[in-house]
Length: 517
Ligand code: BES
Ligand code: ZN
Ligand code: MN
Image 1 (cartoon, rainbow, N blue to C red):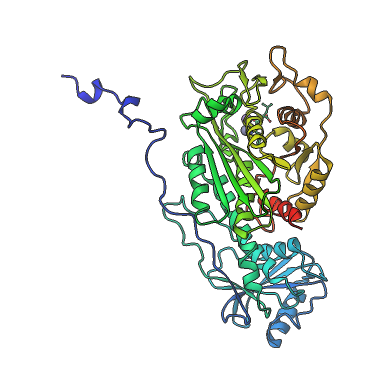
Image 2 (tube, protein in one colour):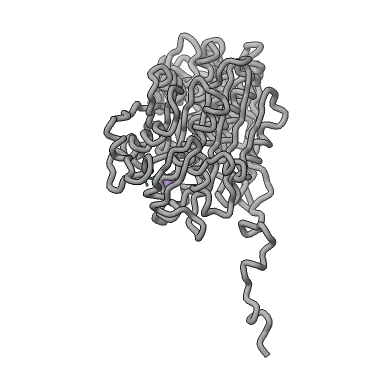
């Protein structure tokens, strides 16, 4: 007799209807909580210390007792430590403190966000696994510096531990910002604490693997994050709704996936009925390339191909939580780009919301396809004063700018200026790239209105930007940030532990502030 197990092999039909993955939950733990950030007037006994210093190495008003200050100064001298900006020196067991990290900061006449956050962050990275309390001594810095120190510590203290089955307990003791100023705590809690938490949220989304993060679960995570936040309206379009509207370029990208596509819009109104700023992000929860499949090496990083969407949504969440006096819309164009029997093919022609047709030469040039429909829908729906795209769009921008900059394309000088300024203030620098008229010829299709790529094309980042611009109706002020090179930090940055940067959230926070003034 033949065993039943052999005669009835496991078929796909054995799975519950609608199950798209294995159905086995990887972890039910939330991500590691961050160390609480507190403020106090005195240094907690037994804490590890972060001591910002300038090149003068004057420790007299640092908050250290005279004896400890003298011992620290002697140790620094012996180590030939000079307090250069962002240089650190870690000392041990002086004055009852398990560790003391000196960190250089430029001499400031008034508080400067990036310099202070970077210094606190850099020192925090040196104390990453420190079990004790950590106290930051802001004594010698200009009045108003304390919130920026807290901000840097919060950003650099980020961890993602939830997928280890036996995690080493992350340190839970607080970071205490020592400051004599009343109001520092409230100033932080009502403002930058919200930006830090939005950055953290964006980083979590980028790191979460694509078997857990797909269009629907992205939407659910955003809805959880927005619980109880006032003046926010969330709109979600499902595939049937997008089909009825005619959003063929977005739907085409997701049609090879078991996970349905979504368009998510978070609308925050903090400035009455003025025209909003729209941030529209590429949300490809996994980019295999589709039928134009990518090579294996590095493909895992394409779980982060929704970094633009995380930045756009993080930007609006930060504005909403801190109660910005601006109107901001965050839009995420969400789809999974997979090969399969139902996937779109090279050579297919698809139709975008406004009726224009696109010849899909390469299914791996999918970000521009989802953004075209998302931009048109956003303009129809909200009539924004400005629309900014952000996307891990092209490998070409990585080749052009490396990890130092993301690329900025714009057809509006005022908007380009605001973005460049916003970005450089927070270490998320942009470099302006051209929109040369020849890109239109590269993208000309013989049978449709435009094609999505050119075989053997050269200015890959520029032609991609042209494609989006062509399908984004004038006269909307439009800019596009190609962040493909900067979604992950390959090594620690002052406020970013190696890994996802949450790039764009701080930039958009600054952009929104520029409209508040
Ligand atoms: N998501 C990728 C771009 C990317 C590459 C992001 C490397 C991060 C790191 C994008 O969808 C893509 O595949 N672009 C293609 C476009 C080409 C087929 C015209 C590229 O850049 O190779
Ligand atoms: Zn992509
Ligand atoms: Mn691609």
